[in-house]
Length: 570
Image (cartoon, rainbow, N blue to C red):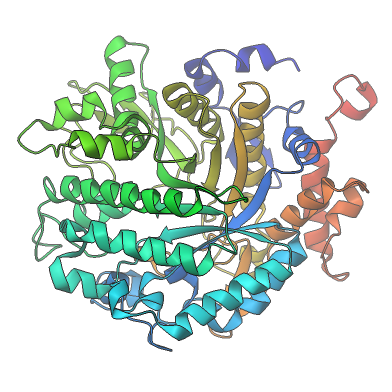
């Protein structure tokens, strides 16, 4: 296509080009996705039958049944029940009631065509005190066994996360949770017990989800459980400079200990078992074409992604992080610990939601005091949502922190591959959005989620470019999220799901984006259907508006698939 040469140039050129906007279906979304490339992810679906197209959830966000059948409390139960900590005091007590409705939720996954599902285990549902030695909760084990059986019967393969932020409150009470090195052994024992219980169902595992977030927001900003920070107007206890570093250190050691048990258990297995860690962060672009801004953006990438990926791949923290934090605060790994950490993942889990500009601070660009709970930035970086002309790096989604920057996903995947080498395949373990501007305020607006359809379309196209043009080994993509759910501090005010959940009745209504996913997943089948037929997948006959919008969406990225056909262009 006519812009392919421009898009193949370095990231900064592609970034500048991306400030244009495309208006479609009445929604303005930043894009670098051209007509000629928009069909690439459908090509991926056809050509790579083993590619993992999945949807994702997390235990505390959907399960509910918080005090039923022997489940012990987690730090998120305690935090969400503390006045003022979540939107309108929302809690995960009921959430999506998945604990009682999992059979229908698995049927929903199957009906949409998903063959992969990322879920997390509730540590305190399985081991209420947090300690394996105190015994497993039989009803918790039975719940997950039934869930895995249902997935297996539906031909859906699980990707299992051991820890998605819900530390048992018993461990927090006993020794301060992740602040204590005792957490390392307790996590490793919980992990090994989970492998023993459910390893026959799942061959793909993740130790931690977004350590950057639960460490930074839980111990730096104090806006997530357990709510510790230096700001006494927000937190009753904590040290934002010290505790995130200590907690992060223990999390990394816990990861290494769990992986050692995993590999010992499955070393002789006939079925390949793999384990990784999911990290998160933004793609960072230099604000200006200066050496200082280039260094600043690289070091911010290392601060977010390198903090937890460098140790589990390279065996130690990034040099820039150690130099910035200083020896008085920076934890140190022993030689044995470095050896246990090095190459302790089989794949990278990547959660991507947004990007930012970064500048070296000067008179016009104030230093950013903290970023995502990182308080040891030492006034070295200015992180910005917009350029010097005031133009946002991408249009806002429904959460204040999220700006939609699809090309950032491609550039991030390339950056990770270049930093860590081609040895480690990548799974995009989360990518999604809430809709902006009150679009989710009504049921009709929430279900007709054209903004989210466009979001997925552009991010999948960016991912496909990374695969086909840049040679990045991406083996899976998991949409966040299967269901609207409890969004942590935002409670139920944000809807990230492709399925609308009526929290009063617990009814599920697949949104337009769910139907779009169903159409995409069916497009990889051998009986490839027309765009109109794809648009009608799983749609009610009387849902004409949804069908029309979905037809337009599919036509938009298919109509220009053949650049040599002038008739199709017209």
